[in-house]
Image (cartoon, rainbow, N blue to C red; front, side, top):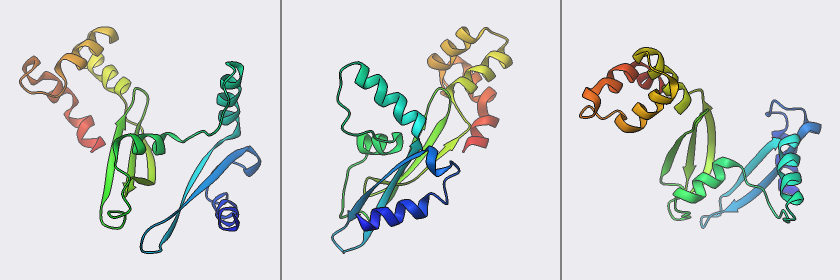
Length: 167
């Protein structure tokens, strides 16, 4: 508990949200070699309160809230103390409004970053370059993807610059 308090106090200096507007918690991990790590979760209190209120209005009891990067890592990566110091994996979640890159070691997120790249952005570019409405651009994106064998490779050509920038 003392380690958690110290970590939370130190972390508030690194998070660009005033402490009184912030909801934070830690989870302490100790691997087989005795190395202790801490996972810090932080979110604006307004976001936490909005989710909690909505769930309570549905007569649901809130036991815990989990930050997105932890939930994604837990869903797709194996939790493994043996590999904790050996292998770092990256999960890329390309969403409709943003992309997150999650770097995890032993299935535990070590860093999560948001990238201004999204499915909606790709749809907008396709719409503009092909001069089609957004709903048609979305359909083309889903049907063709970046496969050069589909749609004569048109999307690979149209999106190559933005994909290269993303990478």
